[in-house]
Amino acid sequence: MIIIKTTTDSHKAMKLIANTLLNKKLAACVNMIPRMRSKYIVDGRITESREVILLIKTTKKLENKVYKTIKDLHNYEIPEISTIQTSKVDKNFENWLKDFVER
Image (cartoon, rainbow, N blue to C red):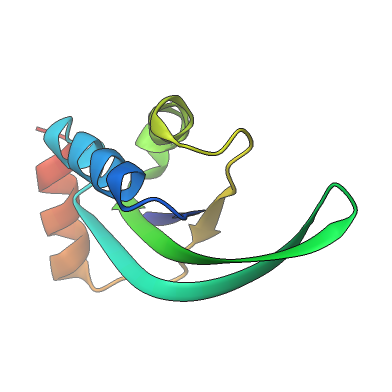
């Protein structure tokens, strides 16, 4: 199992990404953590926004398809997309996840 992380400031984009990944069986679970504050530099200025973090549970085999789907649906020109490698996962959860995405 891997966890792919992305953020967005759009609830519409969040729902579209999560629902598409689940409907296409590219992810077994998407956690959406709301009301995060982010600071970053745009055009030389510090910008602050409220964002939602999406934590997408999937398999290494589907990683590239998940990245492509996020890029296709995301509202940012350059979205943050990163993979978190898991070192240990409960076997029952991992089996459930694989059963879902590999059908």
